[in-house]
Amino acid sequence: DVKVTQSSRYLVKRTGEKVFLECVQDMDHENMFWYRQDPGLGLRLIYFSYDVKMKEKGDIPEGYSVSREKKERFSLILESASTNQTSMYLCASSPRGAGDDEQFFGPGTRLTVL
Amino acid sequence: DAKTTQPPSMDCAEGRAANLPCNHSTISGNEYVYWYRQIHSQGPQYIIHGLKNNETNEMASLIITEDRKSSTLILPHATLRDTAVYYCIVRVGEGFQKLVFGTGTRLLVSP
Image (cartoon, rainbow over the protein chains, first blue to last red):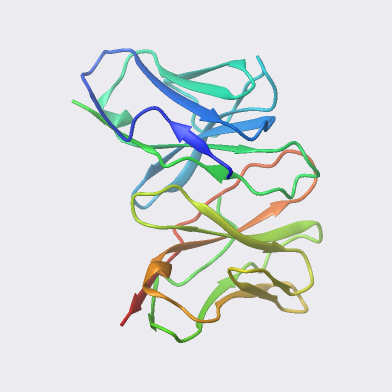
């Protein structure tokens, strides 16, 4: 059974803290993605990676960085968390195919920054 | 920017067919129509996609008009567990392409 897991369902951090969100997929997928979801704004792409050690900026990369040291793991890092980064964070993966492949999503991490 | 337009909400009685419309009047010839859904407190789940022809799988059917400017997702026998937000997305099928989610249609299936 296909699976994308995220390290936490709920997380509460303080302003200025460094935050790590971990995502692991067991499908041997090349592509991995980080989105954030906010009411009225839909899902917005933060970063994506199409191979180990490769990363590309999405639509809203400011304030975030990522790490992909192993194929199955893609980490999202908030270097200094701010209240406007309170959001639902979703990780996804997809195989490197013809481009019309589906993305598989994790359950999400709801991050609150106080 | 989302390239699709969907009604914000719809209701459906349990056991009846749910027909969810989507307008994508600016769709290009090589862009696929994708449908995902998101059940409360879960990540989005892929449902179906198509280019020109109608498609059917175990979850749903996708009807695309001949001019490809609109499509309809059909859940043939809606259940309470189909209550979710349904997203219609268009994307190019070649190479890497991100998904651009709009605000979707909130489908409520009632007993």
